[in-house]
Amino acid sequence: MTARQASQRLPRTLRGGALAACLLLTLAAPDYAADLDAAQVRAALAAAAPGHPADFSHLSLAGLDLSRLNLSGADLAGADLYATKLEDADLHGANLAGANLALAWVIRANFTGANLQGAMVSAMVVASGLETNPAEAPIFAGADFSAARVQGHFAGFDFRGAKFIGTHAAADMRNQSMGLIHADFAGAHMEGADFSHAELGRASFAFAHLQGARFLGADLFMADFSGADIAGADFTGAQFDKAAFDGVRGRESAVGLPPALAGSGPAASAEPALPEH
Image (cartoon, rainbow, N blue to C red):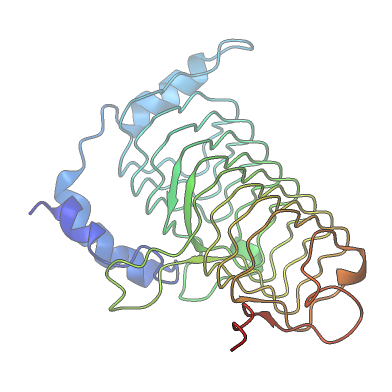
């Protein structure tokens, strides 16, 4: 078994802090095989011109320290950014379609408007400790995660207007010995985000800001919306089996909720009705 394979057997959403990441990085380090070094990346960025962004598509930049670099608009489609340090990096408008960002360090990184379609966004390091810190949070406003694999701890982050169309953010039920691997968007700013047809089983949206968000046809099996603001959100065609909507706000103006969750009374879990005997 390689070090990379060994790391993949561990949970991919250990709280995102440096302690968990260091363990995984220690296991994975021998597998690093970057095609460029950090100096070559800087040179390519310096040579880029308007209309001709730096092209790192399908290259391995795994494990490099690219912190504080201006990668805005760069072409990183299909790039391997496994455990790459992107702290304070500017990636707004970058093309990261199909990129591997597993275990990437993204503290304070700016992904505004980035294309992350089909990317692997798993267990990214988003905090220097075991708990997220608003001052260290990366920004994903307007980013496109359509058809991406998204798992990790994103509590309180800025995802306003982001797209998660067809995204797979359901809990990974394999190898749960060290805790449930799931997407945690608790308290996140997701106003106007689009989760149409996304797989969101066991995802947490507790106390999230979901005004005007779209969940058309989404799978919300055991998803937690407790305390979230869902004013104007559209849940048409969504699957609500065992989803929790306790204490949600704004449900009077939400669309597509089942009768048990609509109206002005106390909201509860959307348990399926038991058959009559």
